[in-house]
Length: 329
Image (spheres, rainbow, N blue to C red):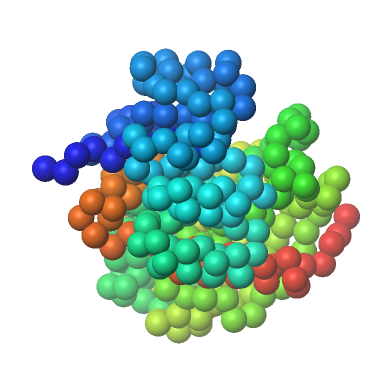
């Protein structure tokens, strides 16, 4: 039996304390052993879930430590590429929060580094590890709803009361498209195997970051071309939903991105006559599954569900949205 994969977290982000730290600790075959933080008091929530955690007040010092095999990076967006490269060059496997880069070309550099070092470098895109999305992809491939004709995707929350959050800071790579557009764009790519062929977009900005965006266009994949619409916002009430409409039915996900916190993971399959079938996955932790899949790839050579090539496709779509967007309001 392989020894547990030993993890260090680079940056004491709130999300890491609430989700990924506990997930690493709970994942079979994995152990959280270290944290690097610029402020010692931020280590407290991590030490609460992992007594005996080694805490470093210098990022480079943790990367130089031989007692860790992999690094999880939840730093602000503009630091992802820099620290992913540093971690890999220090001989560590890397799981970096999304978006792993600010431009698609930067991911080419990470792919080259991955291939050069033989290390696993991946974006922390957790939803592709959840069985509800695996099931949706399976249903589409099996022709459950026939030819996909249209997809609607929406994701919104309101963080206007937190101006210091990196998502509200342009210099930190903030904005709704980079934060949650990665879900409304990439989930559709994952489920259908389609790529955008024609997109237009409108967006609103505040203080240099996009706070609302609507993307419409067409996507084309193995089963043909379909129309597409996606809305993201950091200034609207909580909402997340994906509706995939086909010639013989509709697939709806009510908690597509944050199941367990936003709502129960479930897939609704509605036939043209109105017949409804619901499949549910209560209690599945997609962050734990992400960590376990990461370790399985490192230790056993299993294919990783979200390789950098897939992440590059999403980033290219994000780059396109910014290039075609018209600012309104």
